[in-house]
Amino acid sequence: MAEVLLSHPLDRVALLRINRPEAKNALNAEVRRQLAEHMITLGADASVRVIVITGNHEAFAAGADIKDMAAVGAIELMQRNNHLLWRTIAQCPKPVIAAVQGYAWGGGCELAMHADIIVAGENASFSQPEVKVGIMPGAGGTQRLVRAVGKYRAMFLAMTGQAFSGAEAGQMGLASLVIPDAEVLDKALDIAKTISRMPPLAIAQIKEVLLAGQDASLDTALMLERKAFQLLFASWDQKEGMAAFLEKRKPAYEGV
Ligand code: CO8
Image (tube, rainbow, N blue to C red; front, side, top):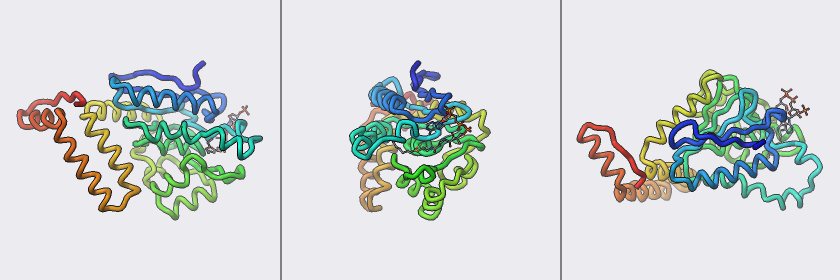
């Protein structure tokens, strides 16, 4: 049985579902490998415009698999080169939406933070609890958390491992949207559908500039934005979008 299930619930939308319910969707080596493989394939598939990652109603993912890590040494851990697998998600050129119900702990919270949009159930449970098992976040948790919620909350959360709800995640800026738990996947797919109908070149530029710009100086980031904005005027979709507006009709974007 695949540990990450791929489906296409909507035109141009791919859904990846982590499928280890017996282990609260803990991210073992196989899950990470399958996720990475799918991200590479879907990222290059022109028929896919948006990728949604989810788990089940109990767990998005309750962290890296502790059984996989408990006895490992530092050199072996280094040689696993896990960051190369995570990078396929971080660097995916398509928009990625995390639909989070239940536990998003440790590596699960970090996985959600690899996404561009997080749709959280109000009773979802987020945490960076690694400190409680003698380690620290190791898949971007310290860095993405501080960028999302600021230094004082990130320090508190990473140093105490305290869990917080989806509702609290929304209040602190870690979730794009908080909704009743049962509606999470439908809402994520709804957002995916909306984005899948947008001009893909513009979506790709928005993603690239927003991510690269947040780690650059404001002047450099504004220049990145300006150049990408100008570049989009070379696209057919820009002509189509503006013509459709002026002609009072719906645009038909083609990604060129
Ligand atoms: N790893 C391995 N197995 C797990 C994990 C996990 N992270 N989480 C749950 N499971 C397993 C349990 O061992 C249990 O298995 P079994 O039935 O064989 O005993 C099964 O899932 C069900 O879990 P529980 O019975 O514990 O379910 P509860 O509803 O009572 O509790 C919790 C759910 C609160 C989520 C609890 O399972 C828990 O505390 N899990 C561990 C959470 C955790 O500490 N996560 C952080 C792990 S460290 C990490 O993520 C580092 C990331 C750095 C990236 C590194 C890249 C390699």
